[in-house]
Each structure stands twice: as C-alpha cells, then as structure tokens.
Amino acid sequence: MLPVPTAGFTLDARLEADSEQVIWLGLCELRLMNDRRWPWLVLVPQRQGIEEIHDLTPLDQTMLTFETNMVAQALKRMTGCTKINSAALGNVVRQLHVHIVARSEDDPGWPGPVWGHGIREPYKAADIHRFAQRIKAAL
Image (cartoon, rainbow, N blue to C red):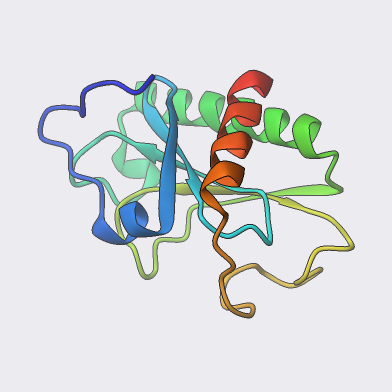
C-alpha cells in the first residue's frame, strides 16, 4: 500500500531505476535496492529539493531519525546480521536518501563498503516481492 506521490515531489531517476518501492512510512518512502548480495534498504524523504539532512525542518529531521532507527531495527531482527550500516552520502545522487544495509562477516564485501564492490546481482521478481513482504512484516 503506497500513497499517491507527494505533491511536487519527484524521485531521482537513478534511485527509481536501482530500487523497488516497499512502503510509505510517513516522511519517507522505503525502497529496496535491487541487489541481492546485501539486504539493502533506502529511505527517501518526500521533500522536493532537499540534499542534506540539515536542509530538513527540525520536525522532519526528527521523523527521519525515527524512521531510520525503526527500519534499522527491523532489518537487523529480520536478517540476524552482525552490523547495520546507515549512511546519507549523496555524492552521485544528490537527492537526500538514507541507505540502511545489513552486513555480516560472510557477505561478499565484508568488511569493506558495499558501494563499488563487484557487479550488482538483481533479485528475481518473486524474491524481491518476498523480501519486501518480510520487511513490512518486521516493521
């Protein structure tokens, strides 16, 4: 169940191409990166023209922190991972978005970053749907 897009908000084309919609949380749309090597979620605040966390209003900053923590806790419970990595980099995609990645010692890139490691391995359609359902249930 996803809402009608926020008036005036447009998702960056690269985020749209690399990820799938999961659920609307309030401030953010939760998306799943289409790379099965890592359980990798992205929160996108539905605010036009925002590039940095400090560009958000204080209330939106609070909501982003709440939603980031909620998603990180759910992802850790769901995956049993060793570590959750959270980051808002935006060097390539300037639109504000927060990555939340479940990491474990046996994942393909441990302990290095997920960015730029190897070649993306897309999910099969049924698997991406299954993952989305599991994270929604964990939330």
